[in-house]
Structures are given as structure tokens and as C-alpha cells.
Amino acid sequence: MRIAVLSDIHGNLEALNEVLADLDRRGVDRTISLGDNVGYGPEPEAVVRTLRERDIPSVMGNHEWALGRPENLDWFNPTAREALVRTEALMSEASLSFCRSLPASLTLEGCRFVHGIPPDDVITYLFQADAVDLERTLTAMEEETCFVGHTHELLLVELGTRGIEVERLGEGRRALEGEGCRLINAGSVGQPRDGDNRAKYVIWDTEPRVLEVRFVSYDIRRTAEGIVAAGIPEIYADRLW
Image (cartoon, rainbow, N blue to C red):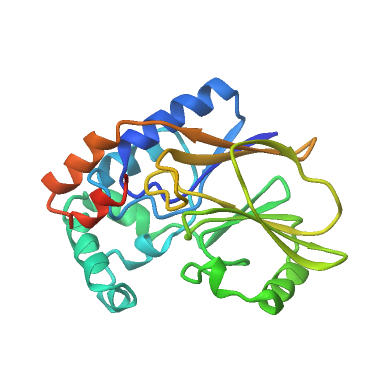
């Protein structure tokens, strides 16, 4: 089975549409989102509707975790809180209810999908876990492969005979061999922070165990202008470049 894994779309409909067109051409069997479908970007309502129309399941990200829950907003810095308040105002009650009801994790084809850290942590970043934490996490995993988001970066974390190994992922295909457990940090569709402004997602081919990292161009200027027009802090438009 070929599974497309999207993460951190962040209300960026332009990037999402280009990614969906790309994965349609690649012939995937399933698509899953790792959460943070909203926040920062100008079209959260359209992004949520698109995911629902395409029957793309999603786990909860920290931005969904905060919607309609004022007590959770303190977790965010002031600028992100401002963006979240504006995001909520741009969404219908149906879409807000959908976001608030997302599960903390999903499993499919022997893989786990979670926004932060497995098994079901929504808010902890992968970089906050040291080697001891990562080894403990991977040892406890019931699944061989877990996909995570949240950092907006592309990383492979493996537990092998020499302990924890961390590798940055680039564009292209690679076979993942060996019997150890692994975490795959799937990058970001809508707000990449890895030095390349193209939208990122991955395709996991479960039978040959091949991972393909896709970089997809989209109209950044249109999204950036939309962020400003929507009344979202301009820093999130600047970050797209």
C-alpha cells in the first residue's frame, strides 16, 4: 500500500491543492494528515472542508487542540495566540467541531500516525526528546514505523544496533531496511521551516518499505497576501519565503 502522509498544512490551501494534485499523479492508495491543518494560514475553513471532502483522516495537532479551549492558548506565544484567535473566527462551527473531535493518534497498515511524539502526544516536539527519551519511546512502540509532524522538518530517527540514529531527509526515494523501529518526521505542507520554501510531504510504500519525499512548488505570493488580508500576523506570511 502506498500511503501519502501530509503534515502541518496550516490553512495554506494553495500548497494543499498542489500537493493533492501531485499525490494524485503518484497513484497513492491512502492519504493521512498529521494535524495542524489550521493556524497561521488564510484559509483554514477551505482546508478542513477539502480534507473532509477527500475523506482524508487526520490526527489532532496542537493548533486543533487549542481551538475553542482558552485554557490551552497559554501554551502558545502571543503572536501564535493572535493567529489562532483569528483562525477560529474564520471557521464555521461545523469545521471547529470536526477539529476538536480529532483523535490523538491513528494506526494503519502497521504504522502509527501522531502529531507530536508516540504513542499519542499532541504537543511535544521531536527535538525536545533526547537520545534516552527517543530510545525509550521507540522501544515501547508496538508499530515498526511512526510518522510525526509538529517540527515542520524532515527527519528519520531509527533505533538500531548502535542506538539512536538521526538523519535529515532530502528529496527523493530511499529504501528503509533493517528490523528496528523508526520515526519519520514528515515535514510541512503549508509552512516549511527546513530552508526550502516548497511544500513537503512523504509517500510510504509499505511492501518494499520505500519512503519517497516530495517537494512541491505552489503560489507562495498568493498565500502570503491572503495571510495579510485575513488579519493574521504578517510574520506568518514572511516565513513562507
